[in-house]
Length: 191
Image (tube, rainbow, N blue to C red; front, side):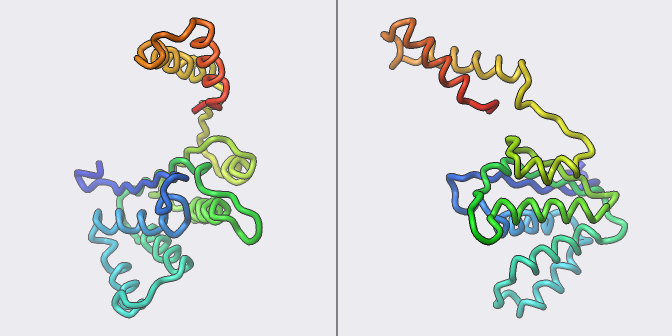
């Protein structure tokens, strides 16, 4: 649908190991960049945003980026927009003022709260309490693989296959291999 121009798609994966993939600003920048490239109906919004920030010489605030995204999503008469945000649990949770994760969860709450018929949001994450507290009330459809027996069996099968085929583990005892399989499978936490 996206390739045919019948929909827009933007996605972001949070990754604690990469500085550019773990906060609200990077999420917003990525989503805006991806949407900019997909529809001419967004050009007016981006042109106005660019002009309002001195033709790119003024650094926009997070609030300005959020408003730009909301303006794009609210453009009348556009095709469906799909936003996928993966790994929200990888976004850091800190003490003090709003943490990066709280900023992201607040944005998600605001986007869903726009009640735009053409906007479809998919969030994936491990089920942290703070995440569930925000996402669960918003969810139209919720699928949890975290506690699924099939998910756990897939993890066990994968670890068993890896341990069985790894040349470095070839000379390990059966008991040591089973211990590794048990420990890694239990501590995988559904991932």
